[in-house]
Image 1 (cartoon, helix red, strand yellow):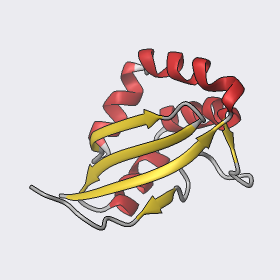
Image 2 (tube, one colour):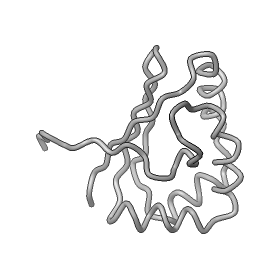
Image 3 (cartoon, one colour):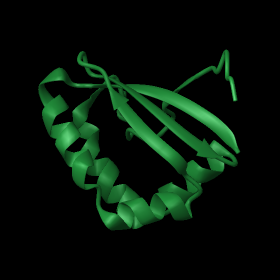
Image 4 (cartoon, one colour):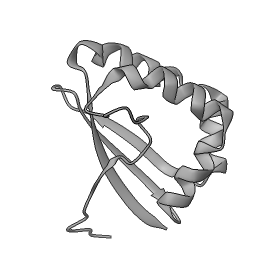
Length: 106
């Protein structure tokens, strides 16, 4: 299983609400992530709004495509889009800024 890390920028004035929304992610969204091949998915938020995401998947593009086909993901992304800066009209889950792994000990 491959590891992927990405980053996005949450609007500083919406960080508290973003955090709160993720305390109660819809059960159907969590099920869709799992069924679409997203494993060990975590989000980390820095105090300036930098969001770091980590996910394991067999193939990230396939996992993203599987999620894109779900109705629950469309609803979730529509609600989350307003929390981010620099998306250029994309949904938050479309083409995230992937980071290159330079070291792993395991």
